[in-house]
Length: 384
Image 1 (spheres, helix red, strand yellow):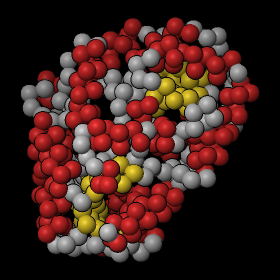
Image 2 (cartoon, rainbow, N blue to C red):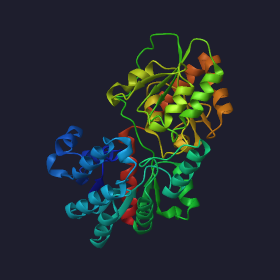
Image 3 (cartoon, rainbow, N blue to C red):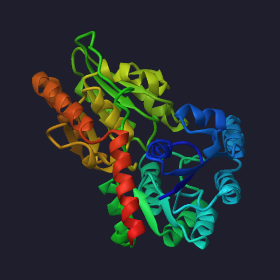
Image 4 (cartoon, helix red, strand yellow):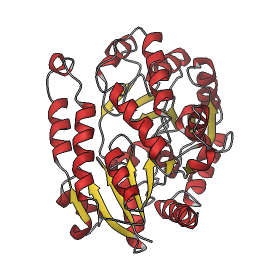
C-alpha cells in the first residue's frame, strides 16, 4: 500500500504523513509549506512537493487593512491555485488523500489513474457549517467578514468533492450526523478521531490555588466565547479566573469590552508552550457552535484537565460524559454555569475527572493510535 497526501497547510495531515512514513506507506506529501518547514516534521525532502504560492497569497491578504480585505475574498481562488498545482505534482499511489476544498482536480486525476480518492474533512458538512454560522452571526447581529464563512464557490466545490470522492474521512460522530442529514451514505464515511502528542502535552504541577477556567483557540463567535464570558461573569466565583488563550477575531471586540476586567487574555501561544497554561488551570471549557473534533480537548485532557464541551465539538468521541468532564448543548449559558460551578464546588471530583481524562487519552488517542486506525481503514477500502 502506498498513500499520497495533498494538503494546503498542515492540519492533522502532517501527523498522518508521519505515521504513514513510520510504517513505510507514505509515497508523497504535497503541501503549501516550504520544504525546510515540512522537514521539521521528519518528512524526508524527496517525499515533499511544496506549493508555497498558497501561503504567500493567503498570508499576504490577511496582512492587508480590514477595509481592503472587505473588498474581495480570494479564498476560492487561492484554494483553486493550490489544487491545480498539486494536480500537476501528483504521482500515482494506491490511495490519494486530500484536504477538502483544495482537492477536486487532484481527486479527479487520482481516480482516472485508478487510485482510491479520499477527501479529508475536519469539520461538519459544509452546508451545515455555513448555515449554523450564519445563524450565529444573525443571533448577535454581527456583520460577517470574509474568511469567517465559507466562500459560496468553496461550498460548491466541496459538494462536488463529496460526490466524486470514493470516501470522505471525518473525525467525529457529530460530523457524521451532519453528513448523514445531508444525504451522504454512511458507507462512504471513514470516521477516526484525531490524536495528541503526549511528549508535548504533559501535566506539570499547578503552582497556585486559583480556580482557573481555560479556553484555547480562536476567540470568535464560532467558538462560542460570548457564552463563556457571560457564564463566568454571572457566576462571579471567589478566587477564580477565566483565561483566554488565542488570537481574537475582530467581531469579538464589543463582547470583550462588555466583560472587560472579568477575564485574562494571553494571546496566541506556541503549541510547545500550551501545556504550561493547561497545567495551571482547573478545567478546560470549549463552548463551540461548530467544529469537527477540536484537538485542544485532547491536549487539555493529556494535561490532566476535565473538559466541558458542547456536542458540536466532537467531544463525545473523546470525552466520557460525567467521567472525563461534561458534554453540554450549544448556546446554553445556564447549563454551562452549572457544570463550571459543580467543578468549582467539588475539587476532589474535579481532580478525579482530570486523572481519568489523562489516562483515557493515553490509552487510545495518541497519534500512533490514530495512524493505526487510519491504516486499518485504508486496508479495508483497498479490499473493497
